[in-house]
Structure formats: C-alpha cells, structure tokens
Length: 96
Image (cartoon, rainbow, N blue to C red; front, side, top):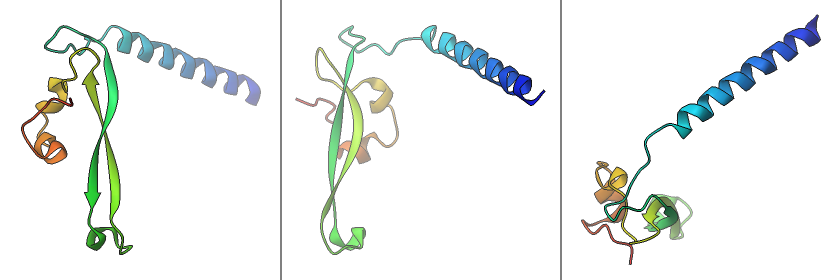
C-alpha cells in the first residue's frame, strides 16, 4: 500500500512539474530595446570594506545581472528595479 501512495505522489509531482513547465514556456519573453531575446549573464563586482566583512580584509561580492547578447544593454526588468542604482552605482545601463 505504501509503495502505491509513493507512486501516486510521484505522479502528482510530475504533473505539477509539467504544468509549471508549460506555464513558463507560454510566458512572455523579455525583449531588449534592440529587439533581441537573448541575454548573457554578467556580474557587477562590489568591493566590500574590511569593516563590513568582519574579516579585516577587503572582499569582492558578485551580483549577477543579465545583459543583451546583441547590444550589451541591461534589460528594463533590471533598470526599472528600485535597487538598480544601488547595484550599478550610476544611471549608466550599458556594460560595454
């Protein structure tokens, strides 16, 4: 009996995963101003003060962002975010 419940639970989980996949695939694409739908992952590097790290040494923190593979701009999804200026430290959205 317990094995049947386990199999039924796995079936339900598989159905949920397939339903989620279908929802993701039918969702709207993020499109750059230049028309491209392809983005590369890049990183903004932040120097963290020794006073903040607690180690007495400066450290570097990596913040992942996405940039357009065609023009190098950060998509509006990021630039419209309230933390954008904190992440980039300026209004410039180009990575080149």
